[in-house]
Image 1 (cartoon, rainbow, N blue to C red):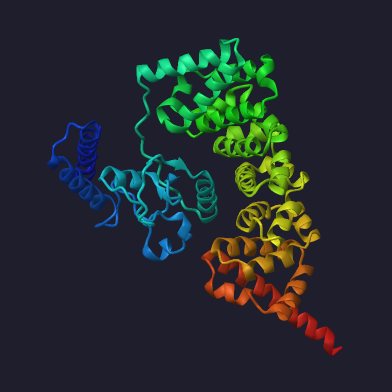
Image 2: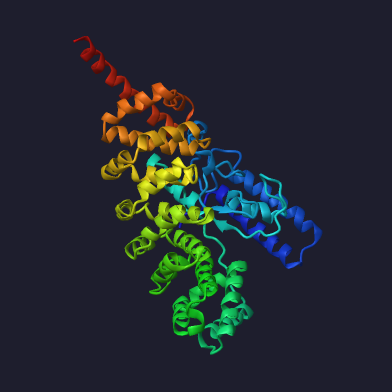
Length: 459
């Protein structure tokens, strides 16, 4: 086997040293020098991987500066300034690449790098919407992300395993519905607080089925909305652990229960069901199952009629599911085009709705529906009024598709521009690289219609 390059060996050694120091510090067995040594090791590791030469630790070429500028700013980690491979949200609400924020916290920093807010809870929540949007952008721009490094797995202690089993026995075996409700509530709290508890599903893959069967077979649990919300949230919490996504997707009761709650639960249950479907749909195999089992129509209903939090959860789930082509026609036939265009017009969910429409705009039938519901005017309005560059870009993507599939729309867009002021010329100069390309192409189409018009006028 070939020996790794010296630079890679040095980086690997720094990682091992840093892990040992952090383990010693967190166990309370380290002296005062360990903190300084850990900070120094982290600084050396960052210099080896981020600073200095044009290659990372694994020898991959970094993007040249002018190419890096083309990456949307929200896809770049604020710490490393590199495109994120594993975006996560911290307590302050900011998103970072997991690897770099873990190193930041491991060095003893207790504040959010961007907001300077003190972070009391360092739990990291995967930002799957940003991850999906990054994956889409990479596909469209021919950018290949390096694979994620193997991460440390969560291991539950014997005590935690016993606690889990005791709680679960109460849920599935107790004859006292009050005791069962308390156990379900307890499991919800434990799976929220502890990644180790979430990891226990790997060794107990039928747990969700047992829990849903216990609910349906116990009269005191069947119609209790709080029990439904707690159970939905348990599935959501379990789904945050990446290796659980396939386990939950393969469970014959899990996804049907989430869809039932999405249709029949109260707003809290429906919102958390949408969030759970969103996290589970990170896997393509789950996207297909969720679409076939009928989740998309109730998600669109939630997008239209839910609370603002529920609408955002529904939009994120719909976007993720529509990454699979088979689900796009289901979403379109279920009314997603009309609902998202009205949301943009109402200024209620602009960014998320534009992302969904841009995803759908590669299909002729879907673009025809957008035209039928006034999509061109709506997109021009979004470009004028939105302050988000990504939203302007998505609106330009949809507008370009409208012009490509139906050239009669070009004159209507030109008339709108003449009446309300040209936003396309500005976008062609100041938008994101993709927005500039789309706006420039539309302007070129508009120019080509003018000679024809002039010739007819002179006759």
